Length: 108
Image (cartoon, rainbow, N blue to C red; front, side, top):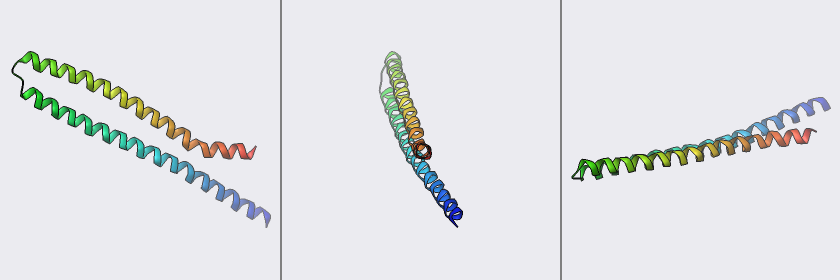
């Protein structure tokens, strides 16, 4: 009888562990999705603003200047967001591993 109880307890602990880990992954993916959506929205808005500015310029030199400034800013923003998303992935991996790490520490 004790073996069955032990097996059930082990199974329950495994399910709890998996749910905690899945919850961490779910939260991390939500944060990443929000970040990607915000970046996409800002990128679209910045592109639309650039088009409006270029339409209003009188010279080709000014249009090239605007485009160059936009390209530089877009690249810097891209790198910053990419770094942040990378950090979110790393945090998600750490958080999803914590329940497993705790289980191993408990088993020792």
